[in-house]
Image 1 (cartoon, one colour):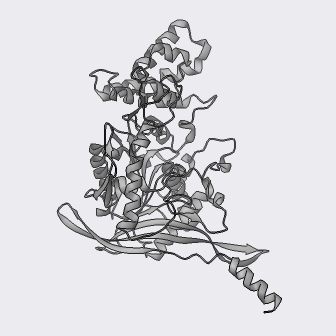
Image 2: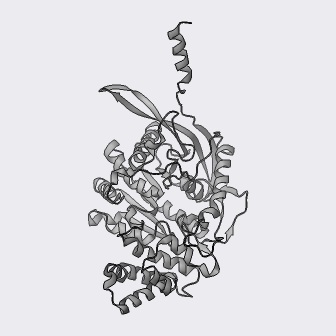
Image 3: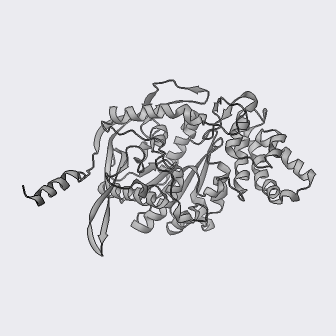
Length: 489
């Protein structure tokens, strides 16, 4: 063999194989409201490609990532039903939570606060699935689930605000085009950081591709990180978190037999008026004024006046979760303050474990790993990354020296598409994305007053994944169904 041929052979042997889609389809039925709903599930990875230009010349359409998704398409009304694209947040979370916790045709049996299911857990049909009203596509961002950058690629290109928006929008465009769904009503469903993603996606899909969604489903919403990030000089989160602290304190008996709504009304009024004023006054508060504010914060939050005074009226959220039930040597959950946990150091300043995550993590992991392989017939030896730390540090370079916010993006999307409807779901005991912060942001949306009627907010007596609480799951499923079904032409 000539030397050049030998070199060509060596190069060929070290060149990664061209990735290809590995989608698998299976057929299923589920009984919904006494009727049989037949559907096709398609799961696997699709290859994302990018147009490459070198020295002003087109250099090909080259693979950059393999993105895992699962779609459910009802066999009836092919091509005319709404379709909902769903994802969770993190950043670093797969879509497992919305997929088998709330929206999909199968759901995990995890139990709830105080009554967790034991291993190996279980799966059951979900008669409340949104599939009754909309086809569903669950998307795992790069480095979550089974999604990965291509061999030799750079995962970091996807681990940031803009790279994430562009890759997920490309998945949505590809699926819509390949499945002939440009004329179907389309919805974006996001949870947590996924709500920030959904709002930015709406604007990007409209301005980049002319793909106009019909609605956004924002579950445990955060559209402005400045409302939830505690930092020096930013007193806003202290006030916006107080009603959530009051709701969690109420759940744990700190407000006696007072109705929850009565407690929340008082907390919201104080958080909107006197509390921000007091924080802004600082050392200018008189001793009597300060004592009054300390007493009111303590009463609402369930903490002692001494503690509130020592933290200078400012209760950081993880400190609250660690302090509230310290006298019982218990902590409460960040994702859901109804959950309680135990710490080996009962005098610690911050808990080391969120009991509302550890309490259900195993159930979701067991269910998704069994379900994908055992029922959807998709095989992959990679670990299914439910919550991946590999995406960090997440890049927010587009927001240098500014708060990470998509309020302007959402406002622009609504102004360009006045038919865009917004559904916001809030959990009262959600200590990650507090409901009063969501209300604060929605009130500041830069949109014409007449378009505010396109926004609806629903509340549940549970946490970040409010559907872990069975009564909330049933009500939320009904609320989402009403929202999507109500948007059909």
